[in-house]
Amino acid sequence: MVRHIILLLFLALFWSGSFMAIKIGVGSIPPLSLTAGRVLLAAVVLAGIACLQGVRMPAEAKFWGFCFLIGILGNGLPFTLMNWGEEKVDSSQAAILMAVMPLATIVLAHFFSVSDRITPAKASGVFFGFSGVIILVEPEAMKGLGGDFCRQLAIFGSAMCYALTVVIIRNMPPFPLMARSAGVLIASALVMVPVALVVDASWTIKPSAEGLLAMVYLGIFPTALSTVILFYLVKQRGANFVAYANYLIPAFAVLWGAIFLDESLSGQAGLATAVILSGMVVTQIRRFS
Image 1: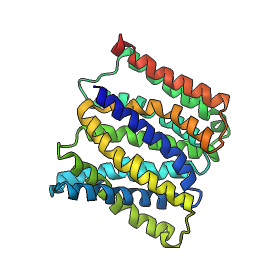
Image 2: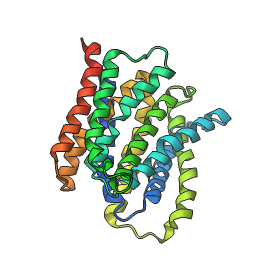
Image 3: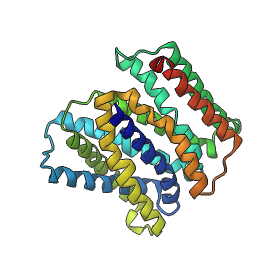
Image 4: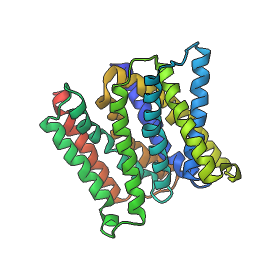
């Protein structure tokens, strides 16, 4: 149990740092190309580790079907939505929007896991969490679609992708951990690299040194290492346990954004964070009572 909590904290730490790295990366690298570079680097790292460990990639169609589904829904699509959103949205706001992922996971787990039904406490947590999101985006939403609201909506969409992904991972056949982790990233790279080459003409991009460093960080920590931790924890503890990491992300990311990116700590963002985190507390009351 202690090991799982420590791994969950590392997962939250890696993922929270990704918002700041994305903000830096999209300054000189288009969203699609940043995603492609990130997953390609992560795929090379994990494929290399799997090879050194003597892990053989399964040839079953079912295995690769899951890999491509998770690779697109859990990596390619949400990474690109997040990158595009953070071109205009502060990294701290992006992290707060991502905090709805555990709440969405609770709802999805109710329908896809017989042993994990929604309780009154969990329902209250869902209410608090989505209330926090409304507090954060409502001023832009009142102006109608367009501007930052569309960017915020893209980030919200990436959170929904992650929620679906952890439920799908829970139902993935029990292939070796490194094979699953590397397979998903290989599949993601096979899809995203050609798309980025066609759409962005990636060979013409001249990224800054900071942008390249951000992409390297994204590829190694929030993608490669986090994928291994994610698969391990979902298998050992289930989707809802892993989803709790996202409740920790806003506190980390708001702090990182203020320290390294000189982003403001607005009262609205603070209130939204407080309301969303209240949802976590409510959902866990019975667990710790």
